[in-house]
Image (cartoon, rainbow, N blue to C red):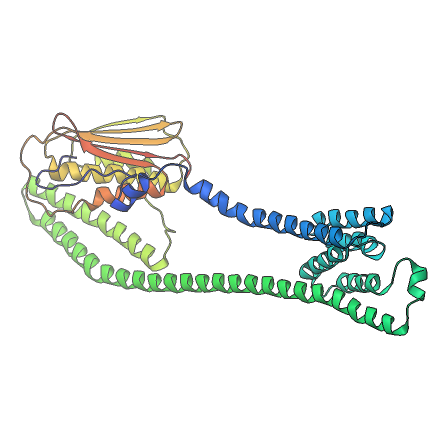
Length: 403
């Protein structure tokens, strides 16, 4: 609509504020790779830890294995190191796989790493204590068995103590890691609970503010509109001039309609949700017929079933534009086009330059068009405004068929 005496900036849904303009200048596709990289970090860190564990186990075997070792002990030790690959998915099985390499080979550190992984994952599960017993037994028993029976009682006691240390150390570390993980999870849940509590508090504050606004609107605005309707009705009943009576009847009709919408809005503010009937695009002919602005309406291929939000947005767009034509372009004809498309619903309202100066009316500050742009953005659509070459104004909005 043309804006005589009022400067309304061109509104676009993609450019509602300077911050949105700054965000729109950012290179497309930069946020998604960053989020993907953040998700990949734990996986990469886990692979690095697994590789380091295997490397340490292999280095331990390579440093302690004698040159004249039996081939089977070398193979068992190597198999124990390789089995660590699956320690995150099959921790108990990996412990069982490392036992032969520890008992008859040299893979002590591999068995300890596997036992620690089992303890971190299972905590106090029976598998942890079975694995600890096996690891202790591997440290206590000397292979080959004939050599074990040749040890003195002092050496058996030392092997018992060392076995407890070898089996107890990874369990202690694993339990500590598991406790830390559980604590982190509980802290995260506590943070989420606090966020939910803050959201509930904010909703309560908003509900209280909505109730206060509803009371003020009902006490002040509805009272004044009711008086206007009553005065208009009284004027229409006593005035003999037909033109004055028609104008008074129009004022009464508009006041009554405004009062109904105001009551619906008050109900929305009090309940916090729009449970009542809202404007519908199917009533657009009634809207066009009830205005004193010359309108040429074109409706083409509009889907029969539209989401209520989309239908209400299209209706409000036409309503606001016709109001602007009446205020800022008196005598101009408005061309309203509502057309269905594959990607949604298109609404266009344009008018030529005003034929004569209009009356001084209260300025709305341009918030009507800004509100329509915000509504379109929330629905995932677009909203554009601009002047035409003939001095008129054009509003174009597109809303998705599915909200």
